[in-house]
Image (cartoon, rainbow, N blue to C red; front, side):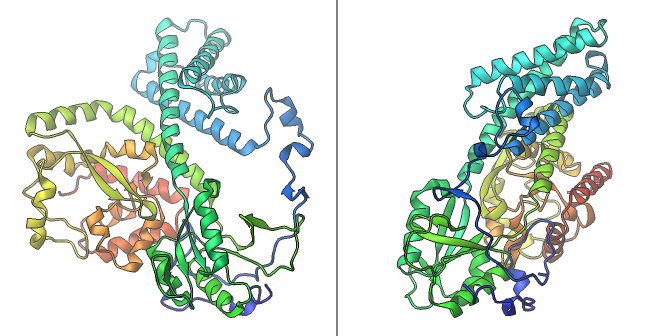
Length: 511
């Protein structure tokens, strides 16, 4: 292990290495010098396992709660999410029908009371175990108690329309949000970390089998690299190939299973570090059982964590909250416009109103992207015949005066109304309000290796390219702006792009 902790391999990457590196949102593409890795101090354990949360003294806050809370952070996130959803729903209600909604001073009190009553119903502590009927009943009681309390503590002249409208809007919005969250949770649970094992020997194969058979690890082994074994379906390459394998296979983490081979282990960890990958390794331990050691086990194989890439988890969570609030409010406000657009499309041409097509999202995952149909129903089949007229550079396809666009299609594309159904993709978690543009699968298949870096972040309805160089035919400029956004991502940048998008919408572009 001393070889791996040696600081002499902590050096700047070569000139060509950043183009293959996995990108972390908000992190610069240039890798800084870092301190030598040191194995963490052993944590207090009980019988070989970390001490449970129940073994520590409970705080005054936890003692005051009606239900025990061992992990407060998920509780905070759930409460903040419900507050955001209620704020978006009631805020939209106030904008659309101010005479049928609570006042600006009553809205925060109402939202807080709903979450307090919901906690009393054990919604946050047992959300996953509640059936739809029990969840609906609990939410209904929480909203009813909250609006009743606001009625008696606020203005008693509140009429029945305000009381009923607020109850209905809040109840339906919270139930829809929970249903979408269940769908998103199921998708998230199906998403796993891509792992590459360095070393295809007995230890590496044992780790691969354990990760494949124990779903709690939530890891998918893409294969292994080994300098001594022949290439096969599982041995994807040599250690020297790790740079491009990290990108082509969307690797998140490597597990170095090369005890006794320090030079090869160091070469692998250098490449992983350059590419922003998490690193774990199988250590050389003396024989025996060591239950108090500060190490993890994959099956019977001990592993230690050498490096974890810092991820702005709180910022990304706030970004997701911003997505839910803005997409939910936009759907409510745009629903009349969407109904008119759907009717015009139905009257204008034959075919479905909504067009769904496969797009490539984060880490190469495919999803169904929804738009209002702006072309003839067989547009995909006609695309091959129009490739010679492509006016974009690189793998992107777009032409001016596309003959496949319908009469209504020209209008809704000019004002970007065709993209309104993508708000559902945002609520489902496939897309974000701001991010790289989702490209069709056939265009992504023509990417060069370094282009895959733009797939490190969830695609968005709008982005830096859309508000700065929408008419530019350069694919490389598109790529540069997307990578610039990922490297410099922040919530402030997202808000700036959203405001810029509003300005663009009122200054319609060409088709």
